[in-house]
Length: 74
Image (tube, rainbow, N blue to C red):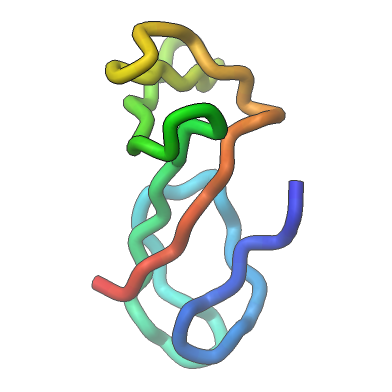
């Protein structure tokens, strides 16, 4: 998985959080998971400490290894 970068200052971000503040420029950033097949936003399923992703458009589970992440300023 390639590094997720802040859209404002290009500092590296953590893809595990949905929303976060960039440690370098203090920008508020929303991280979204994108389906590698159809490029639609994925639904995050969280249970018992495990995180899975589901694509409502493809109607299938998506491996977290293949998920693409996108960062946008809030």
